[in-house]
Length: 63
Image 1 (cartoon, helix red, strand yellow):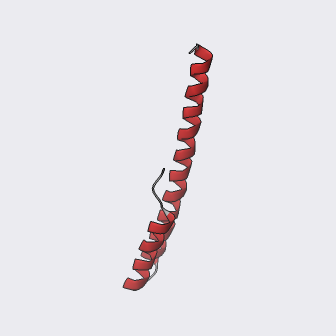
Image 2: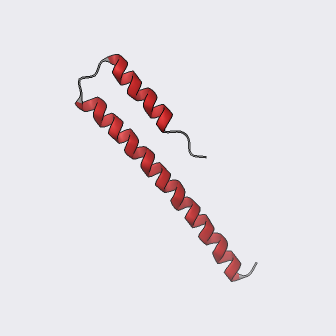
């Protein structure tokens, strides 16, 4: 593999990693929003558990 092909392959890897990091950032923002909502409101145990379930649904493992 010549230098150009190697650089192209490395660039593709970097773009992929950026995409994964962007997905993680979005998931963290959702988690933070839900956590703030749970903290700021006087929620019942059932409501807190529902927020926890929502986090589990919204924040799926990165593939």
